Image 1 (cartoon, rainbow, N blue to C red):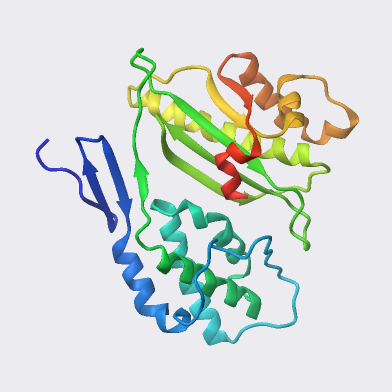
Image 2: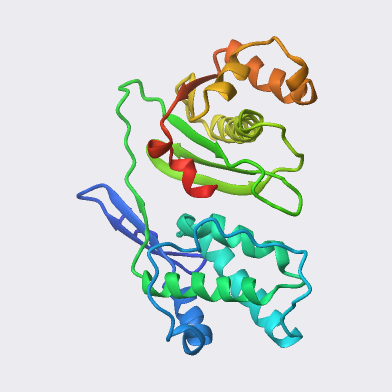
Length: 277
């Protein structure tokens, strides 16, 4: 092909065939973000992180921003969500917190949104790098997914947050940060919940690639940084403590026994999914 794809859904795509690299950037959206919010955030300092460390947005507060500010808040968060979708997974967890109060943000949440926008505009040259690697010599594509969870950090609900990132031939193609739907009773259970969500995504991507005619190397590696969650995934015995997640337990265990996935321990410092929790 002489003509490379250089624009998709307002994403700028640059391809270096010599180095076998590509970059996905969203300059059009960043320009709109700057035009709308720069006067509001230009006096704020530069930040090393996209969000305030350990910041949790709560809904239970008597102080709310004005309706006009709420419109601005929803607009800013919406633009940040589209940025996450294609090129900036580094801000995903912070923006997820902001989405919890789209119907009634507090002044603290509004301030946090401005911090994220300032961080994004200060780092607007960052882009998503794509560098595919096929090293197994079998003509099959490799897949690995990193899974992680925090534990009961939301003071309103005590729900935990799941996060994962899936790499296909070394390229991140799916990432997600999402609050879990049920309360877990330990960090191991929260990690296991996140693991089961990651396995569901693996199955979907595997079936999609299979329908497209691509072969994926099995077993698919799942990297988790919690020994308790790995033990639950590899053992069918269900104690009194884990009966309420018995269905998820057997769901993952079936794929482990069938050789579809292999769960491996990874240290927290090397867990790429830690970014999403």
